[in-house]
Length: 290
Length: 255
Image (cartoon, rainbow over all chains, first blue to last red; front, side, top):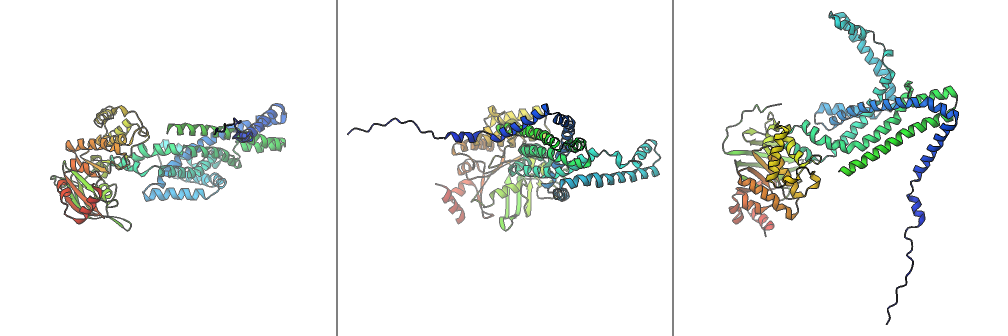
């Protein structure tokens, strides 16, 4: 009996061509298109160009405020994060109160609170200190300082500095939780091995736990940095001349609502998208190293 | 730094003295009235079923676990005393863990030198010299610049032993050092331990490796349900264990 010959048939395509369309990063193309449109408008339309020129100045302050606030927030967060994993009851309680209270209050309220409650209070305390020094000190060099203290006025405290303090304090609580989670994600054996070699708790933290934990929390820290860049728009309520506030000013100046806020949104998007690309790049490099 | 202001107790041959040690985790009693003495230069072998309290007992010696009550004296220093600076004791007591616990962010060399520099305050050069000598001794000097993730289990454990030895400890504690290893890697670790035992290191070993016990142990203790059931020389314990429970356990694990 003859064995039936295998008929050569063209292989059916396993993946329909429509499936390939799904792989195209459409969202990226759409965003890119919108970008090009706005860039085109800025180049051609006088209104857009005017808005852009006026607003782009604010980008610098937005970046500056975010950088400074985030640096402070990281220091605060690391300190409070260490407190959250500490066995020292005072350190732990202090850190927990900070984290829980701050996370429960809207950031906008905190910023206002810092600018109009905490800062004036600190000024008053400084005034009293100055008055006290004037009364009791006879040392000449201290007199000048005492005068400065006594006559300090709330207007002397830069509103941008107050805004930075509010942002940093608010974000510090979130970073504290990021650091806490990072520290707790390191296996217990690491601490035990370090301690068994005679290292103290702080040495073990410094040389063994934190270097590993920080590597793990870099992606969430990057995300929070982007989030803070966006939240820095909240300080426009204090009339800090950052991007959003300049947006308000530009609209009031030109009555071009549409063009103004289009440009503001565009500028924020450029910042955040390029930052998130940077974060992704860093994450990929870290993953490769591990 | 807090110093050990507590007067060291009069020293005799016993480098580790444990008396009436109790430890429980919640309702589970891990150690019940455990007393034992380890002589200087002795290999003290602890074995028994899982959950019997072996590891807990070992971890109490360098205070990774705080006992509920009882006394532990290590080289004349009362570990259980509140005023004792435990870090100073731990620097003298090396420990090797079941899961190696190497520091993954440091090279092999970094793992072995870190505590030397930070605790023993040795210079970088000296620490590296000591580290290379020890890596030579455990047979993997060529891995000095590798990261732990690039090592096999047996190599990891040998690095962990070198890391502990770098502190020039007076006592070495081994917490199931071969339990997480593939069969063909157990020997390379046991060889290093045997070598160490022959040099006269005081060793407390928690393990199931009865071959190692036969070859190196000076005394063996059988721990079950938190109590010391029996303590004897290896040949005696293997030939005619006194307690029924010991017999039963040995018959289950020995072919």
